[in-house]
Structure formats: structure tokens, C-alpha cells
Length: 126
Image (cartoon, rainbow, N blue to C red):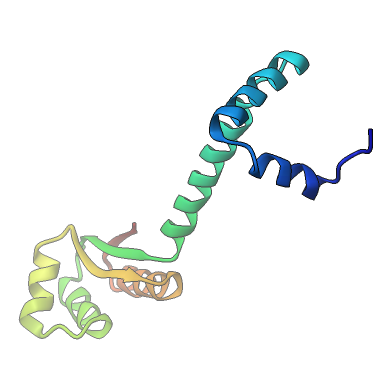
């Protein structure tokens, strides 16, 4: 019997019905004393975690936790980072914890965090 290439083998599986494929998997598991479900579940979980990490890393929220002692300087910094007027910036600072920037890229979020911390605020990235 000629050995099938990987591509030919995949084509053979593609031609099977779901019932035939299920029967094959059961027979394969019995013959080689393995479980096909475990590697699939692990790969699925790892793929899901990787997708979440990527999603998490390309969009950040800059959260002002507390204004600290230099409230006026923090308000000025919030105004510089956003297009908010004085009243809105003051409301953000007074309402801490509050998002200053939402959905910012990593570089923008880190610069905003550094600027706010330099002004005396406590900031987290989410």
C-alpha cells in the first residue's frame, strides 16, 4: 500500500461525513490508545488566550485613580491630553476613579500615564 502524503490524507478526511469522521476518531483512539479531544481542547484554550492577549494589548483605557496633592496641575494635564474644557476636565479629576482616555493605543496610553503621574496623579492602564 502506497503511503499517502499529508495533503492526500487531509483530502480523504474532507470527503468523509461527520458520522464517518466520528467513527474514524473513535477507532483511531482505540488503536493507538490516545484521546483526540485533549490536544484540540488545549489548542483551543491556548488560541483563545492568545486572542485575548492581542485584543487587550492594542487598546488601553487610562484611568485616573486619584488626583493627589497637585489637583490643578492634574486638571491642566487632563486638558492637554483630551479636548475637554476646564469644567469637564475638573469633573473628570473630581470624579476619580475616572477614565481620561479610552481605547488608546499602547504608546499614547503610556505617555498619558507618565504625564499624569508627573503631575502628581495616581493612574492605571486597563
